[in-house]
Amino acid sequence: MELLVKLPDMNIKEDEIKLLLAIKLYEDGIVSLGKAAEIAGYSERAFAEVLIHRGVSPLKYEETNLDEELRNA
Image (cartoon, rainbow, N blue to C red; front, side, top):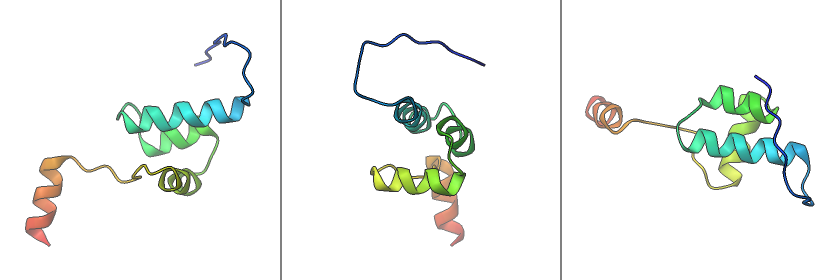
């Protein structure tokens, strides 16, 4: 999918916009870590490191799965 978005003149590079979009889509649960990394143009590992640096957990657990994992630990 290709998307053309017209933005006002800003002092921000296209790569940074892609990264910010990928982070937000991942944070909101719209895309997986792998897909977000692809959008941003990073490997999954590099993208996970960026998330950590920005205070976003690269691990997503649904509450029910986390409870079950804790019971099984």
